[in-house]
Each structure stands twice: as C-alpha cells, then as structure tokens.
Image (cartoon, rainbow, N blue to C red; front, side, top):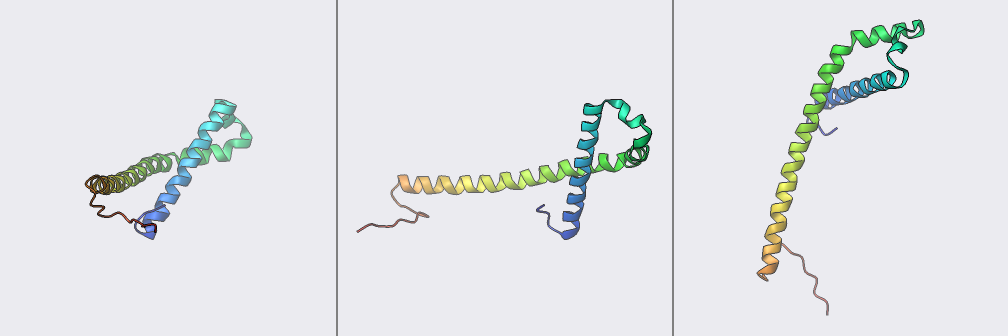
Length: 106
C-alpha cells in the first residue's frame, strides 16, 4: 500500500484483510447456501462473523476511499505525463526538439 504514514499503511492493509474476509463469507453463502451458518460445527465462526460485521462495513468504505485516493493520485500523474508528452510532440513538430534526447549517428 502506498500510504503516506506507517499507521495509514497498516490500517489500509487491515482494511484489505477485512475485505478479503467479506468476500470469503459471500463465497460461502454462494457455494454452500445460507444453511452453512446453522451447522453446529460453524457456530463459533458464525458468531465471529456477526460480531465483526460492522468492522467489515467500515473497512469496506475505507478500502474504497483508499482506492479512490490512489486513482486520483494516479490520474494526476497521468495528466502530467500527457502534458509533458504533448509539449515534446509539439517541439518535435516545430523541429526544436526541446526535451528530446537525440543520438546523432555518424
């Protein structure tokens, strides 16, 4: 994770873990149907799922915000790269070659 502080990075990793758990629970429901949670062998896990559901909801929100923040930063970098690329193209078209490295062959 490319967060600014170690604390933010650890939180983002924890949110990612909780998101993975949420996806596994969804797969259990899809694969085994809703009855797996009433199986006595799964009672402890079912209780844990119920107790931690609010954590997963909060983590899902924060995880999406982390993703959005990353995309915003990446979009800005792409915009800057595009602007630089356009300046170089215009320089080449004007035969000024500003910002272009040219190796001259003998």
